[in-house]
Amino acid sequence: MKKLSDKVYCYPDTLQNKYLPQSWQIFIMKNFIEKYKKKIEFYTGENHKSYHKMTTFQEKINSNPEIHGFVFYSLLQFCYDKKINTQLFKESVNKGYTVYLAREKVVINKKNFLKKKNDLFFFKFTNSNLIEIIKKNFGKK
Image 1 (cartoon, rainbow, N blue to C red):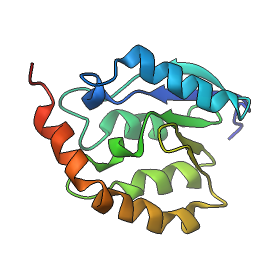
Image 2 (spheres, rainbow, N blue to C red; image 1 turned 180 degrees about the horizontal axis):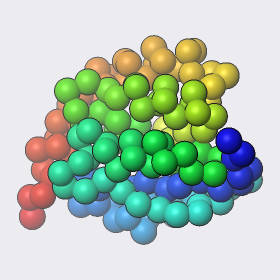
Image 3 (spheres, rainbow, N blue to C red; image 1 turned 90 degrees about the horizontal axis):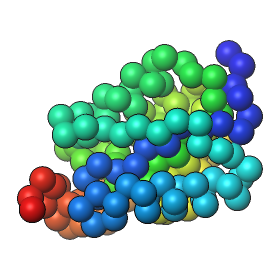
């Protein structure tokens, strides 16, 4: 499958809209990927029912878009379920996509996935209090 070298899909964090509006998240993501000479082609996000399983992202991976990769506001987005969703990283990089995590300034691709896997696993543990606060306050006014 041919990938477009400079296009990425953008995924702001729905749960963090209360703390950081989507427009600011997109600004941060855009600035981060510009360092890698990438551009946002399309942006979407998980909804109130899909954020924990990331089903919207899963559907995009399955549709095999002709892009370079995906940019997320934060690795936190992969941590809203019971355990961190490393399977989505694995599926993405195995299909040739690169995953950019703007808040953490991390880039994950097929070459470095195995090295980063342990860091991904421990991220949820070391940020568990923050994750619980975000989840608890999601939807509250």
